[in-house]
Every structure is written in C-alpha cells, then in structure tokens.
Amino acid sequence: GQQLNQSPQSMFIQEGEDVSMNCTSSSIFNTWLWYKQEPGEGPVLLIALYKAGELTSNGRLTAQFGITRKDSFLNISASIPSDVGIYFCAGYSGGGADGLTFGKGTHLIIQP
Amino acid sequence: GAVVSQHPSRVICKSGTSVKIECRSLDFQATTMFWYRQFPKQSLMLMATSNEGSKATYEQGVEKDKFLINHASLTLSTLTVTSAHPEDSSFYICSATASKPNYGYTFGSGTRLTVV
Image 1: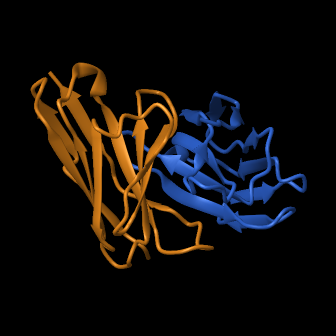
Image 2 (image 1 turned 60 degrees about the vertical axis):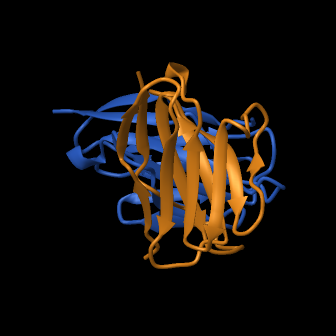
C-alpha cells in the first residue's frame, strides 16, 4: 500500500535539544496525525491536524499541516528523557479504505 | 477519552493452530475498526477494515481466509489467525473510530503473536 516518506529515520540528540521531523507524500491527505509508539505498545495520538496550514501545539510538541496537503512536520522543544520512542506520522485521505497510511517512523534516542 | 482494549497482549501458539485476538472499545461505540500488522522496526501496515454488521474489507495481499475478522457489535471486533505459520509472527494492533469526521483513531495496546 501507499506509504509516507518520513525523515529522519533516527535521531541521536542531547537532552534539552529541539527535535524536528517531517513527512511528505506524493498525494494529498485530508488529515495528518502524529503518533508516538513505545516498545510493545500501540501508538498513542499526539497531535491531529485537519486543515491545510493548521499549526497545532500540545505542550512542547508543535505540528503543522502543509498548505499543499502533501506534508507535515512535528517539532519537539527542549527534549527530555521520556521523549524517547518512535514517532509516526499518519495520513487520512478519505478514500474507500478509510484506514490510515503510516510513515516508517522516526526513532528518537536521547543521549545523556 | 476513548479507550480501546486489546487482548491478549502476548500469545505463543504452535504452527497449524488458530489464534483469536479481541479488540474492544470500552467507552464509545466503534462504527469502524481497523487491524494493522507491524513487523520489528517497521511501520504499521493496514490489513483490513471492519464495519459493524458487514464483511471486512481487506487490503491487497492480505488473505481473507487466513485472517478472519468478525465485527459482531459496535464495541467488539475479533481477528482470528487461522492455521498459523511462523511467518505470521508479528505485532497485531487494532484501532477504532466512532464516526467521521472524527479522525482521532484510538489504538489498542497490540498483541505480540509468536508462532513456533
């Protein structure tokens, strides 16, 4: 099935640094979602974006829905150890399947 | 908030046997439930979409006779892996949504299936 291009694949950062990751697609999505997944658990929704150009924050997290509807980014400010995990973008196109299309994930590792 | 419960969290079965995984929406009625599969260090891939009271819609390449989905009520969907083989070993995750345009899909905690 269709996949989103998510980058970077992994990030090694120092505690306190800011983080930025993004997703791009060759096709338009009506909704962008950002999830965090920890080992052995299901994804947990962080931010949902419903309109092109929308910029939404959730604590230290900020995400934007690109105006072309083909991209989105997620920023994490002042990272802390509990931010470690895999972050996935997901898009919803409103097509027949109605399921989400996921990016391949960004593995965030915070070095002490 | 919306809560989705998935059971069991881990299961080990012998090759050739069948395994049933349950997905329940605890505090809302899920008109649609989705089943995903995730291999180690990979992304989630949609397997099928199930709507209450109707047949599931399977993604291309997913064997409907092998992965049986039943969505008998608005709060319960089940995935049965029939005649399991080692290559079916994976992390299976369900998600549920109440209705459009609520796109805040809530995921279960996943089921780690190991076929030996």
